[in-house]
Structure formats: C-alpha cells, structure tokens
Length: 118
Image (tube, rainbow, N blue to C red; front, side):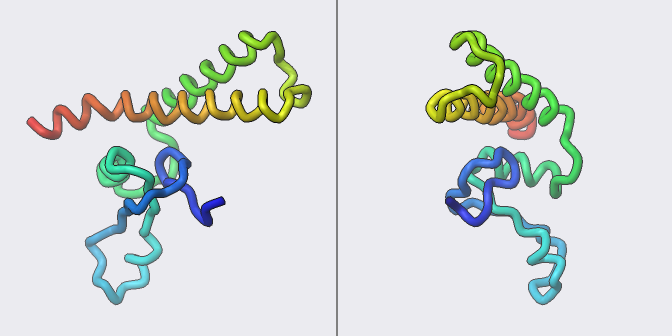
C-alpha cells in the first residue's frame, strides 16, 4: 500500500508531482504544497487548480458518475446492502465507483486541455 495517493484521483502515485513554484526553494511553504500524482492528466488538473481544498464542479460531477457506476454494479448483482457483499463483490463495487470517478474526471478535463492547446 502506498504511503500517499494521487492528490487528484486517489490512485497510487507513479512518479508525477506538483508544487507551488512561486515559493523559493528554502521556503517551507514550497514543501507543504507538494502533491503526489499518478499521471500527466492528473498533473495538468492539479496545475490548473493551484492546489485542492473543496471539490470543483467537475469533481462533484465525477463523484455523481462514480456513484451511478457503483449503483449499476449493485443492480447487476441484485444487492443493495453493502454489508452483505462478499470480498470480491466489494472489490468490484469499489472498482466501479473509483474507475467511474477517475474516468469522468478525465473526460471532463479533456475539453479544457483541448482549449488550452489552441
């Protein structure tokens, strides 16, 4: 288990990162602003936001999408009580929610990326 998760999508970080470059190297705020990230897409999202405190509209929409994906999975197995899921069912449920969230967040960020490149 990693000691930290991607600051954007909560997946395992894979060598990408971000920090507030406006602070001098000797300034402790520079270290405090460091974020571990999993990919370039999440790095770009973090750069646009300049840090993360409250969920953005895109994050809220991605949460709703991830929740719908989890709900669809539960409907497909005919269960609604999370406490009664087997370990495999729980793992699949979480995978649906997290993957749905991450995919939606990246999809929502894609048009912003295209506009930024123009």
